[in-house]
Image (cartoon, rainbow, N blue to C red; front, side):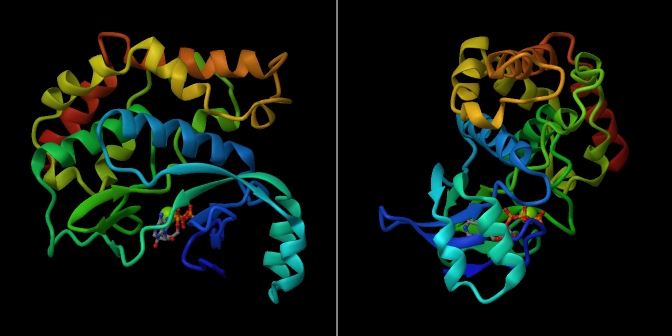
Length: 249
Ligand SMILES: Nc1ncnc2c1ncn2[C@@H]1O[C@H](COP(=O)(O)OP(=O)(O)OP(=O)(O)O)[C@@H](O)[C@H]1O
Ligand SMILES: [Mg+2]
């Protein structure tokens, strides 16, 4: 239907053959399939934790659509993304997050901050909150920058224990209160079985040919191990977020 020019990766509003309207994230955009892997893994973890995330679907894109598109940059994006892509249910009439008009409840703010620290999502800042208000509730979008260790996979086991320095620039830091309370409520929900179920949703073809891994199953297992390590006690990164929070308030 139309490109969304406010997004850095140039997502597009599309109508699919189920007549649903979605925000499509192109596999052929800058960060490639890894951004889509991050969208699924982080998005579905957030949903498991009771946070609101638009439904995530896999979309088959017909490159013929490029012929109807006037902008050559977007034509290229469509052709480079032929086949499987990711899309989120479009929330019609949603508004960008406005902390003055609708300040989030402290428990919700703490839960979102904890979740972003878990998946190392650096993309929830005051300049780019990636939060939408829809029917009076806060919805989380744009998790493509999460799990950024996977762009190199170097030292990924060590990366799983690292602090979340981006907490100091998190849009909800001023609204959060009880970080350890969030940790106690959320961490036990993410069992290895839950993590496995989430990772099983990632299409094989986005994991294949990952440098340093023999096959897609090995990459899937590495993501599971990263998250499971990050959830191991003691979680130093939770203490780190709490310290950043204490200094800020
Ligand atoms: N499900 C949705 N419903 C309604 N609007 C959406 C939805 N998803 C995204 N948008 C709108 O499109 C914009 C761009 O989407 P998104 O942030 O996911 O893309 P992006 O390219 O990763 O952005 P950036 O990297 O610039 O943050 C959002 O800021 C929001 O205004
Ligand atoms: Mg965004």
